[in-house]
Length: 628
Image (cartoon, rainbow, N blue to C red):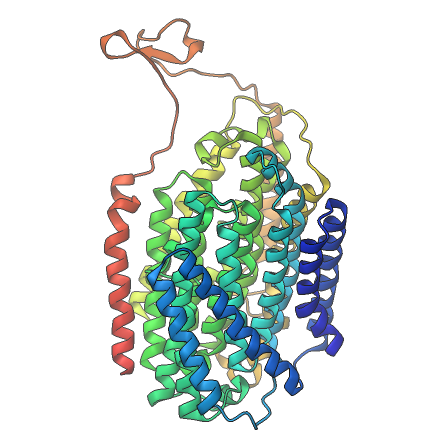
């Protein structure tokens, strides 16, 4: 067990230092690839070994404490460097509170197991290790081309891959932490890494968005540390497993759990804290994929799910369900008003995280299973889509989905993979839709929550279907061969295959893996649409029908005689109709183009953001008020 945990948490950090110190491209490629393979395999080995607790020596406890203060000092340094009062204030608050807690409040005598692996933690480790590794490998050719585009005289890849690998190790540490102080430490490491990665390119826009990410996530850190102090004062322990066995909390302990959940809201970019994640889109695509799919934001929903037994049946639980469902609905609406592919993915991410948090708030066994399965399927599909958008952007010089119209003609492989990724978020038999169905079942007794879930699901269909239609459109079905580096094609194909395989495995994941977690206590509550040998939902016949329909559609498309039809301009065209222009006012030549309707006056950021942030803030205050 010591070796396994070393490989998952410490090895990525050692590999990160190798990438930084040995600035040779071949060494970096070997290090990133080998580290990714090792932690991916090790995560599966750990999953196979099952639940565990692990104690460490006092030396490690002291080291984590020292590193905690050093990390806060580093954040404070950047607060002064950026001259940001919020960062400085929040960091000084944490430094003072942590010092007082460590020196005058905390009893260092009791031995708390530092690490714990249960079903939730082990699933998260597999997601972080496998999907995170694929993203890092994808970054090798991507960053080379990215820096060529920026025309850098000196490569920044050493620091870039230092941060990526450090991120993976910190995330594994976070999800395996049983001591809340260790959870806080790794929480802060991910905050700093995300700040540095978002600002990696060093442009004014990148620095501004990185600064925003740092102060917002520092707020999450301050909330978490405050909660830790209250937890220790109320319960006398920092052992998460002990806290969870006590069942639903009350009084000050419930207030602390509410603060932990709010810290999770911040990390998961829930309304009104979504701006830091939207701003992260300025970062290179591997950063966006890592933050949005398998690591940073998943830490937020993990924290809410981890502590959900402590707020079961309380007002906090109802408040979390309302806040999550509201975020799911509103961010789905905001995604409709976007044509920027990365922003669509960002809003979709925040929206789906809201759905996961709503399930945690509903807090029934069926809802929790739906949340965990959503984490898995969302991580696969969303990381695939981010990598696809990055590949497309480097090829066509744009991330606007309008510029991706008819992409199959020039990038057939990437277009097909992207379409599969979109369909995996949209249609059955893919797991995301089935888990949404499970979430709706679980929310049957929560009127406002289920209405928001249903409306959000309907809006989700709009932006995904529009994007898929653009990709599939084109003047003809013929396509030129597409060449991709191995480390670009490998992650894309691997994630695409994973999305397809998990669609087939969804009923068995439910019946063989997730239901047994709760069967002893909650068997009667887990009927669900997937209950039974192959599921109450007739998924396999449905897969056969979809497969036959797909084959027929491809057959008809290949045999179709597609002709290009230009818009009818009533004789007002300028020059030949093929020139694509018409005579406008005062005889000016105006080019025409086909475009989707984005309903910006209904769903635009400028129309909705302020008001929805106010409502979300009100819901959070209502939840806090209920606790107090």
